[in-house]
Length: 619
Image (cartoon, rainbow, N blue to C red; front, side, top):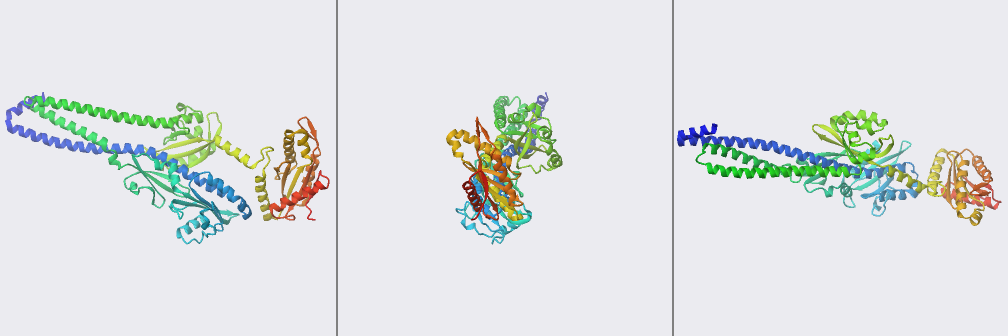
């Protein structure tokens, strides 16, 4: 009715009134265009925020993968450090360094070399090929100022010190990790690892990132070590990659920038809005000119209807695409073998995937809403959590953020299991949330224990093998030299053991060897070592002797115990033993010499009639 009366008035005022109305419509159209422009700016902000949240989720995955790849290699340096801590003598390192370092080197990719620098001078390098020039290099007095600074910092802090990534002399981008080793609070030397960066980037998936994002990585000094440094000039999503010393920054933006990423949907919004504005003006104009422009009005209404349908269709497609992306991400987390969970700012569980249900025994409905630490974290971690949680709530920081940690967790049935935790902080809706990936490493731990057992113990008797015996003997001799003590080395075998094998068979012989191991273990003192050196031969380490008589007393006890019959299967066997004894330092100071002299003494005991012990006699 308003537009009908307006149309009648326009007819009365004539052409002059019509011009005034058209001018007013133009002013209205300009105002509406300004309103559309303001709405477009606001909608662009919404699109950019949505893109920001999507990229934040991606960054967590790449950041966790990068942190895992880095820390896995730093763990190798800690392994070499632990090995060197208990094997600081030149004799032991000369024999064992290459064996141990080769195991670390072959365990992963991207390691250029491992090196030990007693007194700051590199004496041991693996692999030696391609690194010959580093032998004898004095790190403390290196001609490069940055190397000297890093070395001195490692010596002063006694912690792992990392160089910033740089171009290596052998080619490629890498970094150097060093840690100073102290023995009895005295500087012994440096443990060093040179790491290639490209394999770490490859393992973290940075080279195979999606085409719709652009990523870059900066080191602690602000140098770009991956990607294009311009990423950090375009308001990127940034994730901190925590290191043993400082952190790197991983930045991400949509390919071409935020405005280009939002451009298509923003264009749809602007076109749709412009269409609506035009329709409003046209409708007003058509109502004013109701009788004169009736046909044109109907055509414009039909056109506008078609365009509105197109807008609805496009919006529906956008909605379906968002739902599809959400379904895809949920499928990824639902099919993951590791537990993926999220903790809200109050410490409550807000997401719990199927793998978490399988690992911990709680269904999603049971877990969501529960306090994470009270549900699956052992009590001995609670105090540290309560102390650190306020800092996480305020800043999203913490000792566990961005690191790979081996911890224990509690299942629903109360059983503690070993797990590997990777934790990241995500800022959403004005608060910090935690995203955790938890892996059950029970089988891994069991496999490591089994490998350890197989590597250092005899498969038949369970006693230490030659390798473990040699390691313990080296430690015992080093301790004896330092404390001016004596160490007894004994070699023994079973008298006429071959007759048992020949007459009763190897199965009975194996059972006899097992029984021999048990009887020897029972006869030794606490702290002594018995090992099977091969066949029916066994070797003993008797450390911290007050006098040679202590070794004689142990040998006499063993000889007497072997005079008691063995009940093997249905056979009662009387098997005596002959023992040869050498004593450090009187009979030798070298491991090989002591074993040789103990072996000579054992054959002297056999020549004297068996069933006895014999001290080494140089004559």
